[in-house]
Length: 426
Image (cartoon, rainbow, N blue to C red; front, side):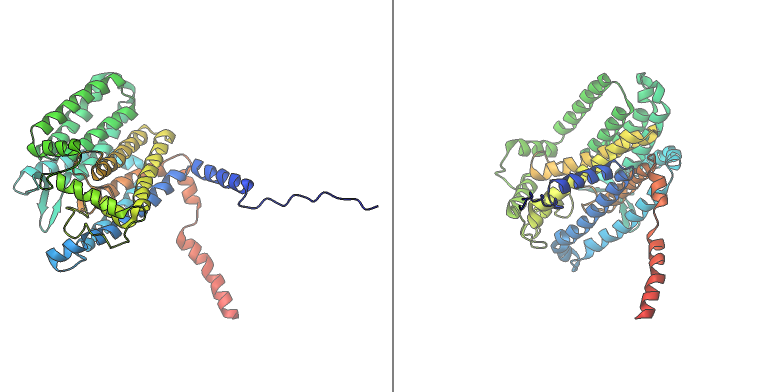
């Protein structure tokens, strides 16, 4: 008598539910690792700077050719700035946290001195803002470097005053008054409201991370909002930008802020879902002002479509997540407060830039961090990312695991003898 046996179920394929569960478990394990914030920051920084260089070349090629006879002038300058910034980022990431902390007073003193130079004969006014200093053939925007100094100084002071921050006097002195007020005041005196707003956001984020009581944020927030409203009402240019933003569709493209708004929307609309192709932008042909600077996202959207713009958004969200991991996972109060300041700087500036380009905010005039052209902005942002990487390396278990991993040189040297033996046998 033949017995019928029930066929066994086929083994689960890697792409089935078991495989998906395994992939999710592996992803959770990798994200839970103390190395995750470090590698996430490295990856996002490399991708944003690389994308920025490609898009600066594309967006600036036409205007660069008109101005200098070469389509590569702006790109080559940006490449030099990127090289300097990457070198500072690598060096900054290897500087111990205690050394960063010791440079706090020196850094903020240098920042105030450089920002004051803006109002000397070395200062340069551009598009109504006096925020640059001429140093021979080079120009420097001190307010960008002041952001790094503000983060380091604020983290050092708030960490030292951790146990007395319940008293408002210790909250205000010396971080808010006189340092932050002086730096922000000098920037506002140069008519750069966008940078001043970023610096105020950095101060507020660091105070929040330090545990300052919420009622003080309501008071300071009201004062800051009143000051911003006064500065806006006192400037016809800023009021026009606000009215253009609130009014929706621009009827007169020659009004301040309207021309950029209209052509940024044209660029994003022309890009559609998948973009017109890398290098094929129409708006960069002297239609969209500042296509390689404040409005580079519009060119990204036009040439690379939604995948390009969403990739930029995702990379900044990942930077925010990695910085939050540092804030939540570090036992060092200086690291926690400093990482919060860096997170607010990069994410809030990206939000302001993106909001201006897509029309959700008035045109404020801040570059897209790590992407837009501009030497001071790129170098300062990369130096700040080096500081954030130093914070990530200080997380419990991160430095030890990084030291335990063989370097690329060691891995290459380990393979070379084997390659030599194999080559001798053939």
